[in-house]
Image (cartoon, rainbow, N blue to C red; front, side, top):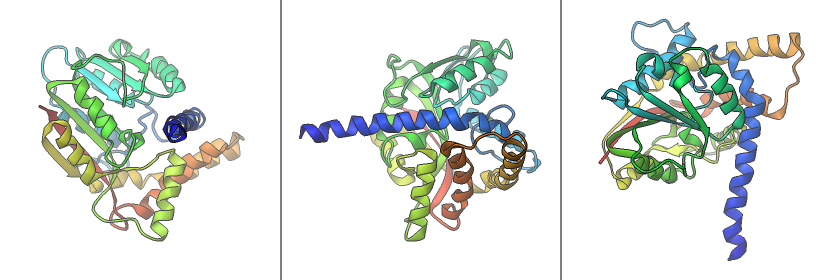
Length: 296
């Protein structure tokens, strides 16, 4: 019994250490993807240029902000897994009076994010800290809005119940939660696709992607309502198509010409986006969703 009780935290600590090491080693490589360090896929709005990757990445930030429906003079907003704070800097430009906070498990991201935030008067007000979004130190009902862009996948379990429970605790009544991420949708991963999926999770140090059905059910059980579940694969796919070109360019310029050493984490960061289409919609059940909900 005692051995079983100890196993979970030990495994969790090992994953956290591996997760931190991954982003410390591979984090700088995201500069090849986004000059602003937007560490996510993009959203192609109607009439936009699918060749302009940075605009699609910024548009994802705008789409998330739109669904947060923040009001008031000084709304308090928290990024659950902020990376280097690119989305927070985007929101700071749109809402100069907002009180913006971000949390990450990676000290390197905190240090670099704070450095990047010094670039403008608005972003200098952003507060970043090291914290676990499943168990933060913030008081209850602190925030008007929370969001997670491609970070919910790192939560525990397929329904991400611990993350959802903490999000509910942190939000004031009427506050909004928005999650943009890849989920396992209706359908199952079978045969070779299951092996590809497990390799993908290994590359990105993910226990399991969320499953959209259990995730939405958990939101309802936790006390969220006004749920909207949008599958936006078609909007995200144009930015995914940039992956092969960015990868080739990165390997040529960073590895061959500059001679940078490729660690396991850096190779995994190259491999994971290449594997993703092999299990993604319409070939497989993994699809990209924007999920939004209101706390009762």
